[in-house]
Image (cartoon, rainbow, N blue to C red; front, side):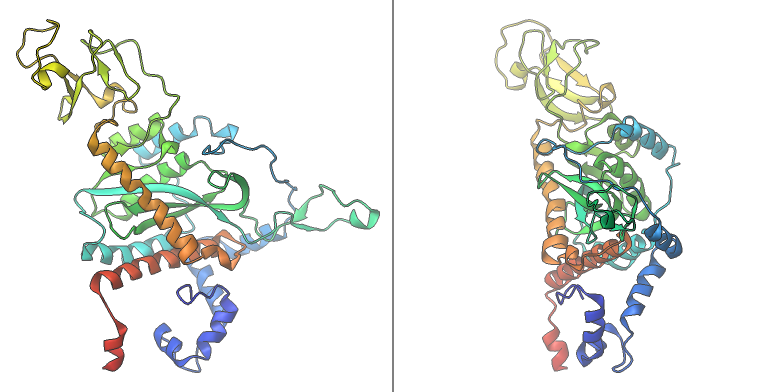
Length: 419
């Protein structure tokens, strides 16, 4: 349906029923194609939440919440006051393997994993399963419903047109969130994607829905835990994300999962100025240690198990040094363990070429968003429930993999039709 550019299920059901080729492709006998109601029934069966509860929520009167007026700065995420400390709480639960497991979309997640992603992995288009890299990011998913709701009061008959009375909403799942890219408020959900960053086809391997106002750092904790359980045969090593995940609980969780973080540092961060390692005067803006003579050390990469190795700049380059801080011909060497501060001193230094090269792959998740929202236009259906929206997103992700299969295998249906 999405491949053919059709976004209305009743129209699609009628189109399939009248087309012999589409009936054959979909696995139906001509003249026995299901009605459009069967499509909706299939979606309800796959969604692990009560449909009766959903209908009751649609009928229930809810308070009217107008569009927020406050504008946020460019690139900033909307954070509710109650979110203070919640990332640390959920990260602690994830380390103890006690995160809440309520996911209505779990069947669709397993369907994508077992029926599609596993085959892409066997084809070798996702990357090395023993050294797997992933990129994560959330994006706004607009609802097709009106945020004004349906008035049931008699205020209009009394000449009151701007009342705030409780009303019914056709999409009870949608909430207000901030779209940092378009710099505007939106009404709907957040769609969180995890992509295989080593794949040349920008393939999504995991999707999750969340409330619009939910911060990406909170969703990332759940996604990190769930994606590892969804793919037990994959060894996840590198974690690439944007500054929204730059917080200590996330780094501690990545340490627990033995994953290397590739997350840019917040520009407002302050480096510690006490309890410094021996031989370190301070740190520069990139987190590199400065020797007692005011010269930055040379980063020599991660040396297991000691930590990130830093050598005297003069001895590293074979230049006569103006000081005598040590008589060792190798030069003064400083090791900074990530445990010292996993956020400021990750295993792979942010100033290293390896970190910069890995961060270039973060755009894979952005291109994956583009494939879903532009190429397959999943918002064109104007869906009025998170269930329908997530179903469209999952099917679009399947199509992205199928497109990659066709390109990788150079498959052509023409020879099959000739046979």
